[in-house]
Length: 248
Ligand SMILES: Nc1ncnc2c1ncn2[C@@H]1O[C@H](COP(=O)(O)OP(=O)(O)OP(=O)(O)O)[C@@H](O)[C@H]1O
Image 1 (cartoon, rainbow, N blue to C red):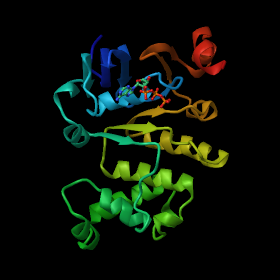
Image 2 (cartoon, rainbow, N blue to C red; image 1 turned 90 degrees about the vertical axis):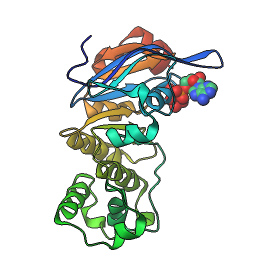
Image 3 (cartoon, rainbow, N blue to C red; image 1 turned 60 degrees about the horizontal axis):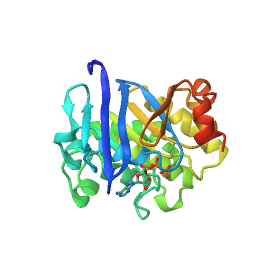
Image 4 (spheres, helix red, strand yellow; image 1 turned 180 degrees about the horizontal axis):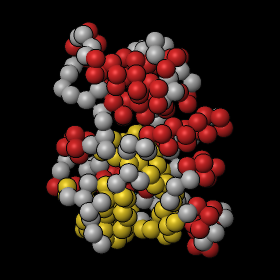
């Protein structure tokens, strides 16, 4: 299959831990500009797949390409982050004692340490980017609030904003709506759809209501490989998916 036009290209990827194949000849292709939802039972290999993409885990075999041409297996975690793959873990890790705005300023890309970042005169370009991110993450009226005082959902949105501040091409988002209210969950689907206008996204999520709201192609992983792929209706009516995951 051609890699051109892809933002992420995995083919025949395997990795074993002590002889156990957590990822087993996995092939998964994400087009540039696409948002994809990844589902699958516990232990299916979702986290390990993201660890491979971000350079945390090296595959034993297979091809892993970013943006059609970058061989990710030749780069380490820091290089991969610099190249434009941003990852959001499940648990928010915002700086509680800083304001929402300062959390974003601290995440803006470019070499900087905490004091220059907070005290240097902000350029017009930086101010515009912060405003854009506050808008897209629904935090415009929380700009001056301490991150500690945000709701759980707002903290997740702030962390997504901190990822955007690094200007990634591809965002990997792990279980963003776990612990959110229904209203926050629905808003998160809208928020990710907004971000998807300008970024490619992979979302790992167990919440099927949320996956339906996203309305994107779904890949179900099982035992380290793709079990089923297509629309949510197609995947969720696949007997093999019902057997290992949804029908439990
Ligand atoms: N560093 C490791 N050493 C040994 N086994 C591992 C390691 N990392 C993952 N595994 C195993 O690989 C398999 C896949 O795990 P992984 O965390 O990728 O699944 P997952 O789909 O993310 O599951 P969950 O939905 O529970 O997060 C599991 O059986 C896990 O125990």
